[in-house]
Amino acid sequence: MARTTRDTAAAPPTVEAATLSAAFVTALRRAGLMCSPDRAVRLAEALRLLPPTDVERLYWVSRVVLVSARGQLPVFDAVFAEVFRGGFDPSAHTGSAAPPAPPGSPEQARTRPSPAGDRAPGQATAPQQKAPAVASAGPDSADRNAPEREAVLAMASTEERLHGMSFAQLTEAEVLEIRRLASRLLLATPTRLSRRTRKSAHSSARLDVRATVRAARRSGTETTRLLYARRREQRRKLVMLCDVSGSMEPYARIFVSLLQGAVATAGAEAFVFSTRLTRLTRQLALRDPDAALARAAVAAPDWAGGTRIADSIRLFVDEHGRRGLARGAVVLIFSDGWAQEDPGQVAAQMARLRRLAHRIIWVNPRKAAPHYRPLAGGMAAALPYCDAFVSGHSYTALAEVAAAIRGDSPSSLNGQSSRKGRGT
Image 1 (cartoon, rainbow, N blue to C red):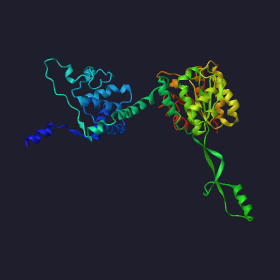
Image 2: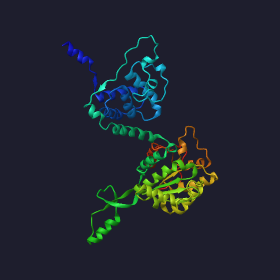
Image 3: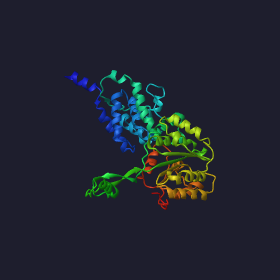
Image 4: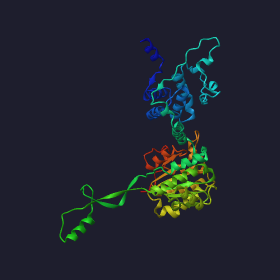
């Protein structure tokens, strides 16, 4: 009986993966690190795939799943040390974001000092708390295809990090990934009542006098059957004008991919402008994004040139907007507002566009700067004629652009937008 008790005490405790992940995520939330419940589910699944045989392996699995930004590392390291390493002293924590060295490396002791490392040489050392072992199907199933599983977990964390990064900070490989995601965004405009009608069986609809008279003529007698009709609902047109001048080059490469996706899937109209206006709807209508962007680059030779906002808007209104393209449409303008033009000319052309369009949205990636103020001549002149002013500087910020297009996002102009001459 004594032997059985001794064997039981020597065996490591077993903790179910879901319980461990839920408790750790709760501790992180109490410390101020925002972790959604789905992160706890993903951590439990990761721990089943990669059972932690030691503390360092548990650290790396938890970090890959739960940390999505470098600024979250100090809080995560502090909570992990307190929960799984024991003896954590908050006053001695420096908040360093440096990751611990991999298990077995010579730098592990320096990057992840044990609680006893700060004690005096003659002071007694308390036993270090061990991380509970997670129940698993066996070591063979845990080690099989481990590198592939770690890569899948790391991929999810990297994608979340890319979502919040500014387009100007992306590498070439990251730009390709964000361009692929941007081209798949669904941009839906609000609906409007069309002049066309459809039959309706309800008397609450408008009486269709013409259809009723035609039915009576066909029968040859007077008829008491009344026909009703309702006006159809249709999506408003979406018109997108993108500034591809030199100051917008880091962002234009992503915005043009957004234009390509909107043209190919939502039937939007796409224009780019720098020193002149170029219509790219036909070039971007291809389903193949690479071929569409290649044709667009050939059609716009003034790419990365100067900026002429007033002339570009005037040309759009004269040749396209007044002919019906902008009437009652949602017009999206991507530009930082930097132009060597008279602000009065920009204001005059924006006023003309305002009288045609249903809604004007200005996307300026410079708006994301903490102390940004719309003081540039072109931007300050155009802002009173806009319904929404958003940044769109990252993939996450593009969700605000989509909400502004739908019309369910509150305007960030604090009531400065002009409501005169709104298009129908």
